[in-house]
Length: 197
View 1 (tube, rainbow, N blue to C red):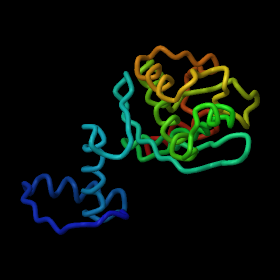
View 2 (view 1 turned 90 degrees about the horizontal axis):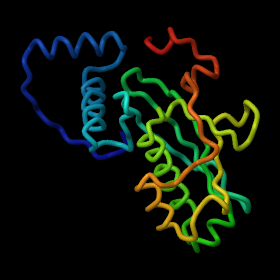
View 3 (view 1 turned 120 degrees about the vertical axis):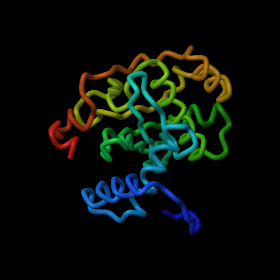
């Protein structure tokens, strides 16, 4: 954790302490690290933790992101879709914005706007009933582009505000998105048995 930490003393029933210690031992981590992970999952589930969403089927996903590409053609971020319940990365997407959109929207901070648009899109797909670890875009054909999406000027309104409003109202349509029966990590070869380890 990169944040400041505090020492806190808590009183918990001995039965809970034993259960938590057994779980920590099984995972090969310290009691403290396991307790922090339990708290983090609870906070995500209640909407107070890191960027996360819960699917219609009740699955909790945590979304991590980092810059991927920033050139004259597009600004793209990588989004990692984790399922905390199994402590596994379930999908990896590249979501970007074409340069014409950024110019038309008169964006000064391309990186921040691109990141926020990508997160807004993932939450939009989630609200539309997609499991966000099963997304497939057919914008760029081929297995190497499984999970790549770059918005182009013909797909969006004239301003960023209008686009975000359309996403929030669930009125935008992505003609490239579909949902596979399997999560992306399974499509790429992870055996289902490995999910539960």
